[in-house]
Length: 279
Ligand code: C2E
Ligand code: CA
Ligand code: CA
Ligand code: CA
Image 1 (tube, rainbow, N blue to C red):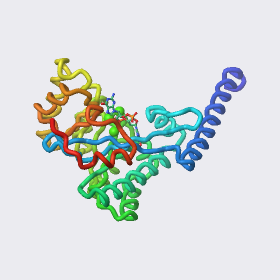
Image 2 (image 1 turned 90 degrees about the vertical axis):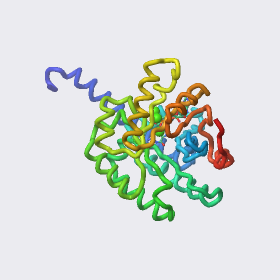
Image 3 (image 1 turned 180 degrees about the horizontal axis):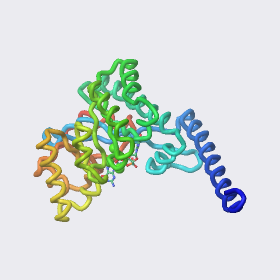
């Protein structure tokens, strides 16, 4: 190929080198950012629709870049996955969330849990269950203080690796949730295959409730399905009273969204922990 398509080949190689270099630089930047504590976790409550109480918090990563300002996780998580940094970042997220839930359990008491998002790429790179086990042991935390959310749309790759990891996590007593449920290509298959402890309905199905009849039908069917399977179902992206009323009437298990609280730094969230919402 070198002889005939020399030029095309050269361009291709240069692009690859640039790309590799860019990823190399980015990795350096990520590591520096982690060391300089530019990453932070914010927490968003999940509320039980039966008790009005906060059952847990979802940890969401934030990057406060000194020059570029706040970078959204929707941007830096894919970059971290691509550059191979996701393992380091993901482990930092697990450790930081565990440290926080320990503090909350000690100061506020109760059964508060923290849910962390774990990238499929992280499952492929390492034994997540072993890391979680070691972290819990080191911090002397029970398994019911941590939950793992895995996004459905990417479950299709490396199914067997993830299946194994999910089994191991569940054996430790850690709950595993399928996130963004309904956005993948094989939701029902995953539900059966992974035996998740809970599912989170993607906010795209919640946004146009209760007026959009299709979404209303899909969401009520999903709630019925979860009830039949005896698993919890969480609706995310709840922003209005009308959405909340619909979900309550359909007997959804838990809700999450700006209607209750935006994701907030731990210190601000501490004040909310023992609050009871009345609907
Ligand atoms: P996600 O796990 O589906 O998280 C829900 C997203 O919806 C969050 O965006 C949250 O701030 C936002 N949200 C919550 N309530 C509402 C609402 O009522 N209305 C609207 N419009 N949005 C709401 P965020 O924090 O920007 O995170 C985006 C995605 O980045 C997350 O989606 C998750 O997939 C990923 N992510 C965030 N933190 C981490 C992390 O630590 N590790 C990994 N692997 N992924 C993360
Ligand atoms: Ca999530
Ligand atoms: Ca989600
Ligand atoms: Ca999402």
